[in-house]
Length: 111
View 1 (cartoon, rainbow, N blue to C red):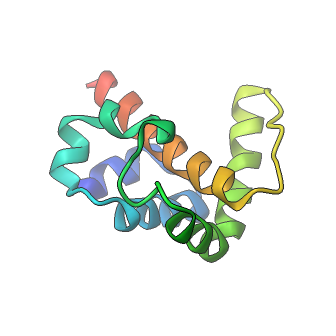
View 2: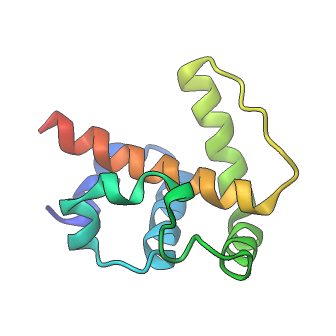
C-alpha cells in the first residue's frame, strides 16, 4: 500500500496531511515497516524510534505545533472527547505519533 493512498483516505485537512508526513519523517522506520506492523509504533511509551528522547520530541513538537493543535481540535470534534492537553512538548509529539498511527491502523483494518 502506498503512503499517499493512506494519506488521501485518512487525512481530510491540509494540517493532518502535513502532520502525517512529518510523523513519518521523524520515525526511525520505513513506510513498509510501519504499514506492515503499525501496532509496533502505536504506543509512544513503548519507545518508538524518533519519539523517545526529549531532544527528538521537543524540536518535533515545536516545528509542528500548529498542525498538532489543529489535529487535537479535529480529534475532539470527531470524538466529542475533550483532550486534556498539557503544556508539554513531549506530550504533543506523542499525540501526533499516536494520532497518525491510529489513522493507519483504522485504514488497514477497513480493507
